[in-house]
Image 1 (cartoon, rainbow, N blue to C red):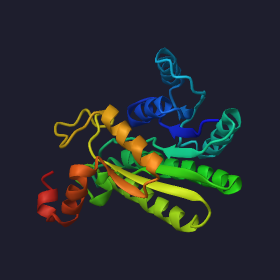
Image 2 (image 1 turned 30 degrees about the vertical axis):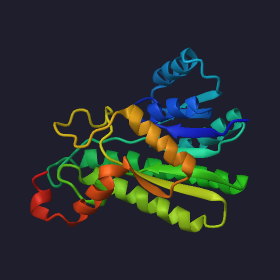
Image 3 (image 1 turned 60 degrees about the horizontal axis):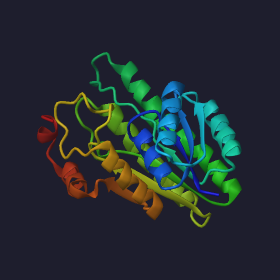
Length: 246
């Protein structure tokens, strides 16, 4: 039996591309997203590529937190088990603090932090019972520094990185691997409206890097490593007056 990866936000962007990449490598897929029609289109694309792997799908909004646990269990049963959980679903709405845009901030935290936490908690409970597994979470280079007009996005991505680090400590010697990914600009609908996307890579290239890191069970990594490993260090030390102009 091939290993199976559970992916949230699988209908577009990184989630969809990673699903295709992992399927091409022989992994079974357990896919969840709000848009069932997009998941059906993804299944059809996998079939047209003559990739013979099992694919199970469910509609899921990760802010329906109790439903996250139900869907994880349903897909685990249907797939004959889950080996990797990829907490990927996320949004980037953009807002400014103190400008009457708190509803956007609340929604970002609901999806990017609480939705990811629910996914990770469901996966961790399953893997603890199973005796092992691999949890992968998507943070961001934006987690390294609070950026103008992206306050809640930065905060939510920093939060999920720390949450995953806590899981790694709690799961020590329990055969549960934890990977924290820090993507830079990958060409997806999440960011394609931005006027400036430095060091942009295609979603296909990004998914290949992510799949490699998953298979290596990397603890944490930038996507791509170069130049973001260097830029990440610079972001932390840049003067606030420089950050304010970004």
